[in-house]
Length: 62
Image 1 (cartoon, rainbow, N blue to C red):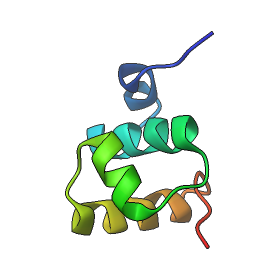
Image 2 (tube, rainbow, N blue to C red):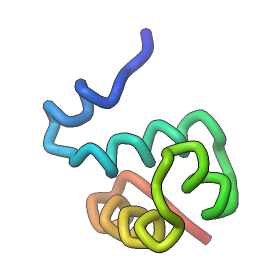
Image 3 (cartoon, helix red, strand yellow):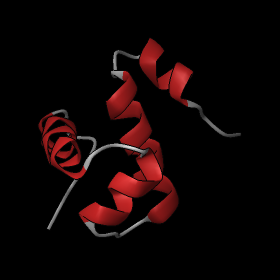
Image 4 (cartoon, one colour):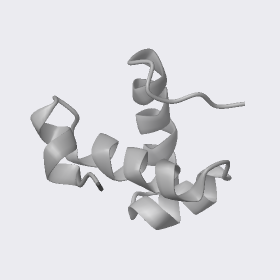
């Protein structure tokens, strides 16, 4: 079973949060630049969204 961005948005994630979350699931441990490229977000935006996902407990960064 796979999950898509629309389903994550139904759980309250924004479009950017869901795109980044799915990119992180696919890439696993990755650099911000790789996550930004995969999620099609700008790098500064990626840092902000990573922080938002960390606050929600959905993301852990090193």
